[in-house]
Length: 350
Image 1: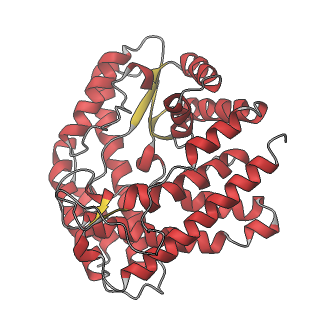
Image 2: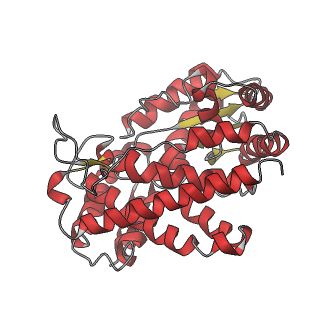
């Protein structure tokens, strides 16, 4: 039986949200087994088909768990009132690892007590294994739980801001994906954001500056810059060194072309048809490298039982086979960032 067939069987057994916690643990254990089984797969096999198959199926699992937990909480508190629960971050992009935390928001009706609903939803997800986002991108926070009109006004205010974190919220909202409730409301919010960006030529250089941040993994002499101190000594920062630079660059290009997909891989596929030929020719390399990044994130997460474990790739996984792959990923990622910068700055006055 393939792993996703086993997961389907587990979901069928879960007749209540109380059963989901233990079954979620079973899925995580099976995902770890898959990662271990593919750990020594040749890196020329980009991403690894069995690995990517299990990875994609895991996101179906995450969505179903969140739908059931949020749905039950909403029904108990608000009955049939209309709400939209959306996820952002790795959940919005369908790139969660086995240990990803929750990043989410709510679009509520005028008759809904957003403070109470948001808190109950976040508490319920926490109880089922989804840790709270350290950056407080949570439906229980006032600026992540609003009516659609309030969201639109909020976006308009952020567009005129010079603040780094205000602009960051606009980029985060571009990854919003409805998991439960009124998808039309979330779609309206995102299209309002894209239309606002299309009208404002002055915001793009600021978004570019916000996007082009990354952590150096290699020194001037080509040496690997590992962590020097603490429990992560000898390891490298996969999240800020390779993963987020890819995600951020592709997101900005997707916004430029008003692509509504949230998955990084799906955005790349859409960009192949949107970019001029000279840049579209690079998309296959970007996709292959990003699949390797996803594989590295799962390798980093496989042996830990705490949230955010996938940020660091420990020293024992930096083998002689992994290092050249990592070097290649970094090279392609920097090339991607240069393409994004040239494209947006040259065409700033579109």
